[in-house]
Length: 539
Ligand code: NAP
Image 1 (cartoon, rainbow, N blue to C red):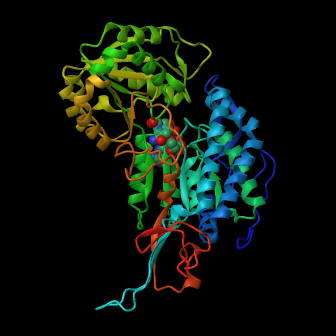
Image 2: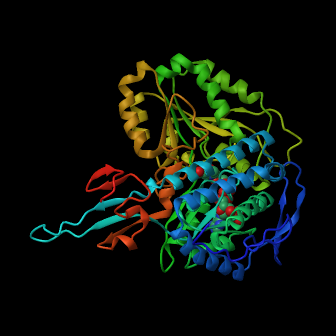
Image 3: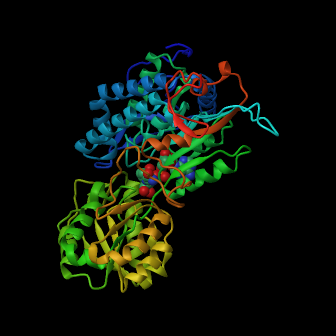
């Protein structure tokens, strides 16, 4: 690889320091196995102020080299990271199982998704057309004023700080979608490891460092810092060299980081992907035709991964004339379940508090099904719980629209379909909304669809929202409070757009322009030249 000088990251075995991975420290913490409560070695030190400053300085240095790297070079890096992750897959998955309690099969699947995501971004970087190159050629003869040569494209923002969530220790964590998108765009990445899975983070971080080191990328291309609390994350967001924040996690966490990013002397974008209750609207015709199937689908969807998905259906609207088979199917499914293992003792405790508060706080909410058995093998666990209420009570109790992270769902009964469109219009922002409809519901669909499109990043039809496809057309986003910026997605290839900004070059001579904008089109890219999409050169 040419043009990028490596500044000397030495990659050593597990437990030994890598300069880009901070681990030792005076104050520190251990990962805890949520299934047994056992503390897992080794101890992870919290990063010091000096380590935060060093990571940011090195990322600032690396940003220069990354900005002039080619898409092919970044694609090579992403593919190498994928290869390194696959070579370390067994160790990573075993450690992730101990730290999260997630089943090995799920974690192996998540590794597949993580590697696929890295390779997809490699293809995007290599193709290069994501930079949206536009050229308006000069018109020196134009009167009364000649037109200059105006060319623009997307350029990388600079160092990005990434915060992953606890519920996807691979796909939304150290080498997850945010890291893949930022590296593909040409931005250095500093990850603040999630304290619930530090060992997994370290192993993944080492795989990334091996890749950057073998390919000769600067040390500051990637860094991983640990902390058991919030100080390191806050310091990173406030560091003047950091140019953007990508966060996946709770509403409280996301909003705290948004405030910090906005209150800096130089405010920066904070792309916070937070939680939502992902309302599902079952129209009367669909309920009449498929009551049992819809109930079965919902039971699976809200308990998948112990309900610890940001896309879990938390609220379902059903007609008051819903057949008994719907309620029976849900009661039977949940009654046959045991309490479910959760990611951390803290998440399990917050889940129980949330469910108890909903049961206690609102006289209009009734619990109609609850897991009868307790799984004694799980220390951190939550019982699947179904509650129901009326539409009147739902609309007068705004907290019922909030996410409870875990296996619970609220069923809301409506009297008329007209009420549904009105409720849909008043929703806060959600990651997803879902419609179940049949032909008989036709006349109500258009109004509901129009309302839901305005309140969510993704509208799901006759299916269930849990799970997000990583592809080109995916939108995993939505209006606040689901995310901090509804114009972007955090999943899929379009998420690269968060980490770049348009720059216009006016009358800059060809030889000084990025290759993407040069007249001969040396990369053979599709560009917009004088308003027309073309791969032709200007010569
Ligand atoms: P979390 O508790 O918010 O933690 C996420 C990360 O942010 C952690 O590293 C955490 O560090 C850090 N953090 C949180 N608050 C902070 C603050 N005020 N200052 C600095 N750092 C802060 O979330 P989680 O428990 O990992 O994940 C569960 C939540 O994520 C659920 O609500 C779920 O819906 C949501 N989620 C959303 C998506 C999405 O795509 N939108 C995907 C998955 C999950 P500390 O723990 O040290 O504070």
